[in-house]
Length: 85
Image (cartoon, rainbow, N blue to C red; front, side, top):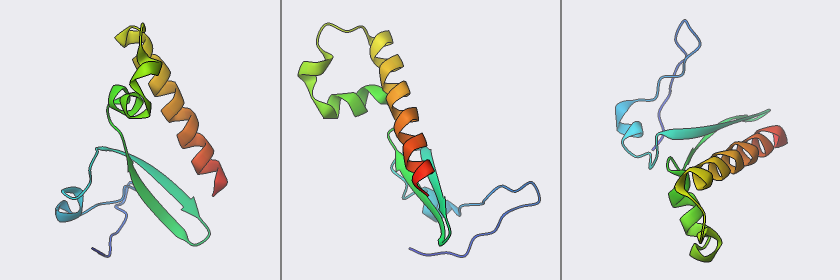
């Protein structure tokens, strides 16, 4: 699906409702480059994201610790991806 979208007076990008319904997650990573802007959805729940990597790595860790590690990894990876553009 393609749509023409606009920035409002405050610089916010409006994403039409029909496009928002297609997004898997509410957390998005925006990548800017010379050729334009790319928006990619990322996992909202860091525990699910870690669970996809392998259950053995999660053994004997508290939920609080897993959330802290997951959020740190997501932020670190997001910054790496943004810096590439």
